[in-house]
Amino acid sequence: MVETVDCVVVGAGVVGLAVARQLARDGRDVLIVEAESAMGTQISSRNSEVIHAGIYYQPGSLKARLCRRGRDLLYAFCDDYHVGYRRCGKLIVVTAPEQLDTLRELKARGEANGVEDLLPLPPQDVQALEPEIRCLGALHSPSTGIIDSHALMTALQGDAEAHGAMIAFSSKIHTVAAIPQGLLLEIAGAQDIEIAARSVVNCAGLGAVDLACGVVGLAKTHIPEQRLAKGNYFRLAARSPFQRLIYPVPEPGGLGVHLTLDLGGLARFGPDVQWIEDFDFDVDASRAQGFYDRIREYWPGLEAGSLVPDYAGIRPKIVMDGELRTDFMICGEDQHGVKGLVNLFGIESPGLTSCLAIAEYVGGLAAGPR
Image 1 (cartoon, rainbow, N blue to C red):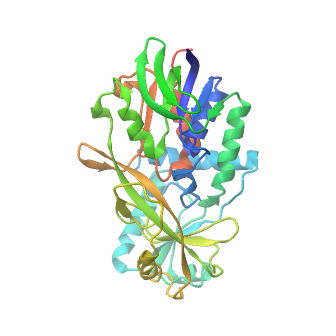
Image 2: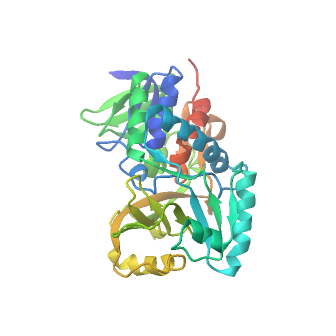
Image 3: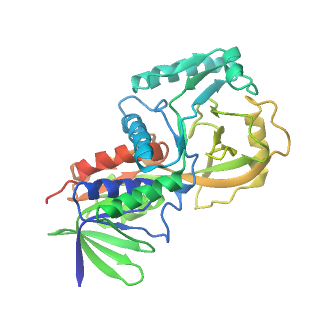
């Protein structure tokens, strides 16, 4: 017997939960299908937990638009739902003369994206804020913050369920195929079932490309190749001397090895960029020396032996037509022609910051027939 539901959201990470909440609040009948036994076990629980201001992204891109909107929505959500956060601010520091132009470009780009509170600081002002930092100047972003990502996901799941959404853990989708009613999903879980849905939103994160490849009728030209960029983190064993996040200027593939804080004051450094072929969340302790070298460029007082392996995350980079895409890729029927299907690819940083804005955006694409 085929069960029916209005909308299936695949993936119970922070983006999938936000999308499910949005659709449920819009009056949709929503089922969340998650392959793992708990929410947010991959990308959503293995990141820096930073609320980004919206500085880095190409003006007009989805990342720029959704990060800026998402930041404001996220701070308001945290206040309304009592999710822990701190608007601690961050410093993007310059340690070499040739980077000064990059800092000016970042300020201009951030302002083009609607980030209006960026302040260039000379070295003496940076040291007045963070005495341990040595640099040639910095860009101060006071609207950057940190968040308890697990509490955020718990709140999103709770509000989605309060508006009627259901969630099925340990359930893996094998195929999706177009049928007259919408889309038919074959799902393996405690028992194998078939579900007919008017809409399917693919928020499967690291599994999004594989899921799309299983959609009967979706042309391969609309599915990107996926590249895995592993990011390792090391935590500071000693007490942190910093009150703000400290970032170097960006590097290819990421934002550089930066210092972040959690709400308890624990400091960690990362992520680096390690291209891998298969999922691997182990942190190789031998990579620590590279961390020491890069951190000491802006914090020369970092003592030997003070970094301890912490955790690793994997960013889903995507390639289309042989080129690495730097933007989110969110595609509905207008792009790929499969009615009722919305695919989300390459949802890495600033995905957490953008989650509520992504949910708004997807809500429009997944409106479908009522």
